[in-house]
Image (tube, rainbow, N blue to C red):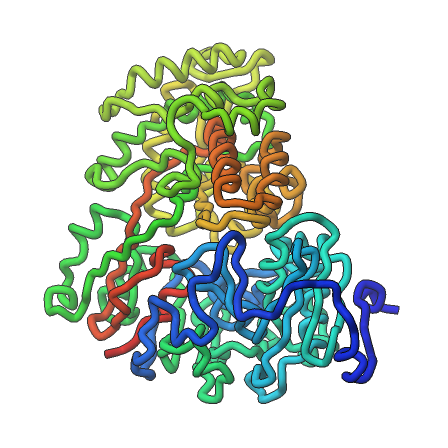
Length: 603
């Protein structure tokens, strides 16, 4: 007997039996679900607030990416798949309004129903939902997808599966998920797993798929052409089942989406300047001003657009690997942060036009409030005070330099901290008490020019402390493999965070996730305080409670000194062909999933 037969309760009974069944729930099916409030959009909403329902259809948009791919399956640990496929090539039971945190609307599901305490959730499929080959999306597809992803899929899917007590087929179109823990967000998460076509995969090894199997999905776009590592092309399905659905009207306007892959960012930019690519995102404020005066731009064929957002900054910078013994002492990590001359680097890279990230959830109401912790934060962390990094409750801020190359004050501080941690300089080399030299590697992907420049300046600063830093440039395949297996000491990374933090935070920061291959806990942090806050976060009942928990977690992570942060902007800079248009109203998440190319069009 298969695992699914044991895990799933199947009711193979006539429909009349189901209509006669009595339920104790007081709930009713509805078109949407929200974590804390009432959904903003009514059942008959015409379109998403940031979509143009009258946008013209047609044309091709050519996008670029740095790196490569060797798989068309974004749901497994093996291989490198274009990340965009998760969002453009698959659909879920519920969909997002990116102008509204913590709320979902029916997509493949026409309705959702929850128990009074959200101990279970039911979804009823739309009868019109179908795959691109014309076959209907069935409960069998849902059952198979959840079990497969939950047992052999990527780590991002397995956490929910462990919390599902049973999956029940309530009728030919309705499925119920019952949960084994008090966690109100699970009702939302249960609607956000991609639904795959069971018939395409049941005779194949799902975990070994590469480029041999082109997925048949229910999404508006299907893969029609590709060359591994060079390009991938998706075509809009003219018979797409949900063209007139409120979640879809005014979206998916291009006939073709093509992604070209480049060895490094400089080649990618040259291709954009030559008109071979339609869109280019620029993260550097100085380049945005000084390097977009090429012929196509001067002729007016290129438009520069700035898209604001209100989402948290997340964390971007050089991540230390806490699995490595040399980074265990907070004084060492603080010394490495002190030696990072941000003000000088920001001037060299951006003419001082960008601001430094101050914490993980900064730029939002979820971020820590500077200074001493408030009473609600102290109460949350009271049992962990003895083990918290210095500054957690008192207040911690990343150091500032005087902007000169010498950075003398901070370098003196770094030297003192290293001495306190048991290190001393002998013959120009920093050594521990056993005489072992302090050295480490910064791992970079080939073509990462921005981080290469930053790392070279940083390495020169560390050399003054007697620390030998090796900067290793490796190809995309080796880089991805080493990251997956946590075989690095320091690496540039960006951890995006949302306005609706929940169960996914465990993937980023939990002790359980730290030692999993392919983990998203890149730092490898293991903190009882963070684990406790994560457990509280998943059970939070109000916005105020959620805010207190995230602010406490922000303090612990920031004072943990696990990352050397660089800069951020609360706008996205997008240069694009002038024929490409987007609505004047942008969602609070700004330029993120669901925006480009989703609501853009050719005029």
